[in-house]
Length: 209
Image 1 (cartoon, rainbow, N blue to C red):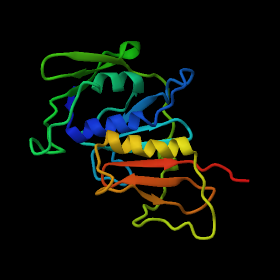
Image 2 (image 1 turned 135 degrees about the vertical axis):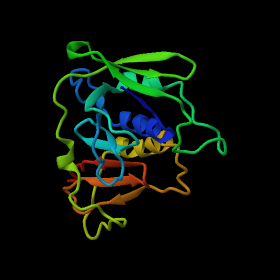
Image 3 (image 1 turned 135 degrees about the horizontal axis):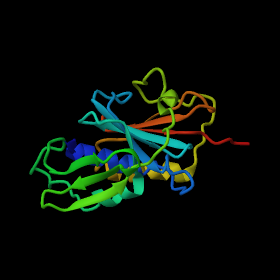
Image 4 (image 1 turned 90 degrees about the horizontal axis):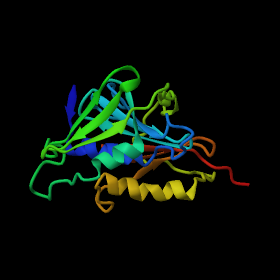
């Protein structure tokens, strides 16, 4: 069964891929995992998530896919040629892209494809193995306002913080009008960054001596 991707689906998939591991020895998390379940903090039928064990990103999908884990590198390559409609030519969340994501085969022959309107098809690998229980890391209560650091210091990996700009670019958000919000409740707990109604980014803290 193929799923027609909205513009926002493509943006979320690209942003999630930035959070995947680049370690070839850990193929299950060098991937983007899709689930046909509500994404925490979002009202949508599906979710795309990726993690490298130090940070995690997830966002809503407009469709409810069967659970599957797609190679992040292959997914980025498959979506590389897609370009969003120019402003004023289509809804940001509409089916203007015309791309179709599909997972085909069975058993050890599973693979995924992204089909373009012109007829071109890009293929990619489906990963095998159990994806980590990522939902256990998501805060039980969803913050409504920006967190206050109070009298403690919360420190995060600078490279992972720099990726906030890359994620914002993948989501095609204007930082001037859609700022990244952050909630930090404890120096030993993850910081939660989120991009309006598009994407969430959980970042593990680092120790400061």
